Length: 124
Image (tube, rainbow, N blue to C red):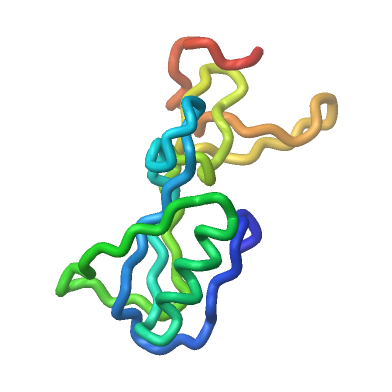
């Protein structure tokens, strides 16, 4: 995934470790933004956690839910975290956004049709 500031393994073995990845918030709290869940096998757990820490983020190991199956190297990006899609340029809303291309304005992110929220400080 090209958005990640760290490399993930891709061995495709069953994941046995889940790492929550946090980024700092504006105040510098290292747990300020829950950005992703990374799934890796036991062999790649330490290397992946080291890569996360090396990117200036925090890795926190949590239990895998017993009914969850993932392959080593899979990741879930939280849409409201720092790694999520940028805010809608009209309302500042984050997550569930779509890419819009305009001949006049170039690419930008916007809310899906019918889901635009009132302007709450986003750029217009």
